[in-house]
Image (tube, rainbow, N blue to C red):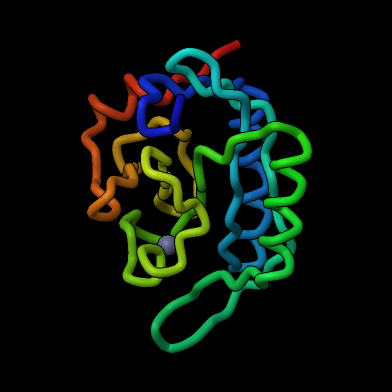
Length: 160
Ligand SMILES: [Zn+2]
């Protein structure tokens, strides 16, 4: 059973709310925030159980902004995931304006397993997760591919 075979990622409303509130809080200080969702794989479903926010800092430059997460912080996260039998399935962040996968998002993606999703929210996450301006990418062997709203709303389902 691998992430690439997952047909549905089920995320509790409470994790969506917690994530949006953390992203908006960072945005109030004009910073981007990267979050990760992990959970348990069963049959062809990934049941999200945790939102992870590794230590990070947002770097502002003339090219825009980006988030830096140290190798040590990522290592700690991997150790935690392995110890708790968790699969990292989704990375989530927001842009101050339009949502898209930037070059830096492609190069520095933390989630590296085929089948993982990268969700990018527009307007610093001011609207809901499932919004017309949200962009979702799925990692294939050849790289990140944008998937249509119809595709991702069937894969990513908010429950309870
Ligand atoms: Zn980005």
